[in-house]
Image 1 (cartoon, protein in one colour):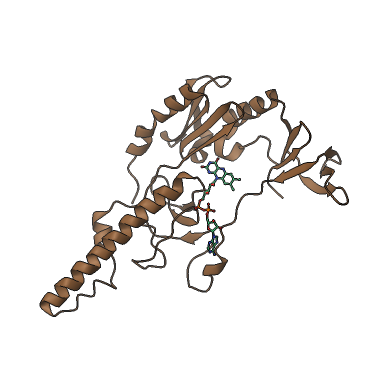
Image 2 (cartoon, protein in one colour):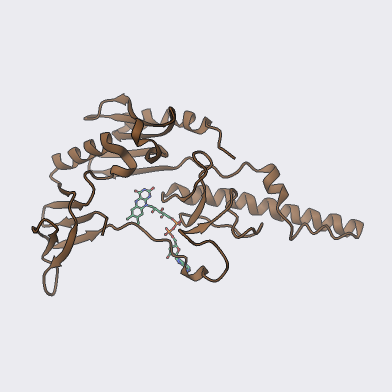
Amino acid sequence: MCAPVVVVGAADVTVVDPLPLPMLAPLGELLATELCRRHERRGVRFALGRHVTGFAGRDRVTGVRLDDGGTLAADVVVESAGSIANTAWLAGNGLDLTDGVLTDTHLRVGGRPDVVAVGDIARFPGLRYDGVPRRVEHWSILTDTARHAARVLATHLAEAESGARAGSDTGVNTGAGTGPATGVDGDLAPFAPLPTFWSDQHDFRLQSFGAPALGTADARVLYGEPSWDVVVGYHQGGQLVGVVALGGQAAVAAAARHRATLLQQSPTT
Ligand SMILES: Cc1cc2nc3c(=O)[nH]c(=O)nc-3n(C[C@H](O)[C@H](O)[C@H](O)COP(=O)(O)OP(=O)(O)OC[C@H]3O[C@@H](n4cnc5c(N)ncnc54)[C@H](O)[C@@H]3O)c2cc1C
C-alpha cells in the first residue's frame, strides 16, 4: 500500500504515510513541511516514511501495525488510497480506458463528434502545460468539463442541422451529421482549464491554481512567509505553472492575483 492511512483515536489522530512529508508530490518540500508543522502544532501526529503491514483486533480494529514493528492503537482507521475511475461498464466499446476515458482536445471520445466525457473520469490532453493526457481530480473539473462539452455538443448539433437543411435545399447529402465536427474544431478554443482546488484544514485553507506538481523543483515564495500567510509559486522552465496559498483570506487573495498570469499562458495545441 502506498497511501496515507489516518489512525483516529478518542482524541488523537496519527497519519501514516510512506512518503517523508504529507502532500509532498502536489506541494513540494517547502509547503509540505509547513503543512506538516501546522498539523503537528494542532495535535496531529505523523508516522512518515512508514508502511502499514496489517491491523490488530478480532471483531473490530484496535490497532494498526507498522513496518518498523510498532503498533498504533486505534478505534477508527480511515484509509486514503486514491481513486480508480469506474470505467468497467464501458469495456468492449473500443475506447482507451487506460486511466479514465481518453478524450481529444474537445473532450470527444472515440473519434466521435457526438460523444463526450465529463467529470474527473475524462483524461484529456493538458494543453496548458505539456500536452500529456491526464485526469484532473478536483471539484472544479466537473463544471469546467460540463461547460465545454455542452458547447461542443451544441456546436455539433447546430452544424448537423444546418448541414441537413443545406442538403435538403440542394438535394445533396452533405454528410454533416456523421462527418468530423469541423465547426467545433474551427470555432471553439480547445479545452484548457486552469486546474483549481481548495482544502480547508483546521483553521487554515490550502488553495491551488494551475499545476504546482509540475513545478515543485523550482518553488519560490511569492507572498508572505511560510509560518503565516504564504503563497508559493511553482515554475517549469522559468515559467509560472502553479501557485498555492496556505493560510487565511489574505493568502488566498494574494494567490488569486496570479490567476491572470497562469491563464495568459498560451495553451500548446
Ligand atoms: C475523499 C475525497 C476528498 C476530496 N477532496 C477534494 C477537495 O478537497 N477539493 C477538490 O477540489 N476535490 C476533492 N476531491 C475530488 C472531487 O471530489 C472529485 O474530483 C469530484 O467529485 C469528481 O466529480 P465527478 O462528478 O466527475 O464524479 P463523482 O463525484 O465521483 O460522481 C460520479 C457519479 O457517477 C456514479 N456512477 C459511477 N458509475 C456509474 C454507472 N455505471 N452508472 C451510473 N452512475 C455511475 C457514481 O455513483 C457517482 O454518483 C476529493 C475526492 C475524494 C474521494
